[in-house]
Length: 80
Image (cartoon, one colour):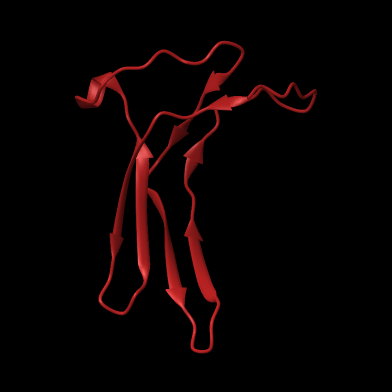
């Protein structure tokens, strides 16, 4: 989906994502950008988008007693 904006160019991300469930039911999601210089597969940027880089980032989603979840987010990115 492409949605033009006048505030900033649209961004394109090429990511490696790892997901794991811990013994207590928490969900861990780790991600970072892929690049051919790091030995990863290459993918050209999508037309009309600027390729941005996600540095090591992730989420920890912890279940709460009685329902619901607590979400911890760590995002580290270079939007170029």
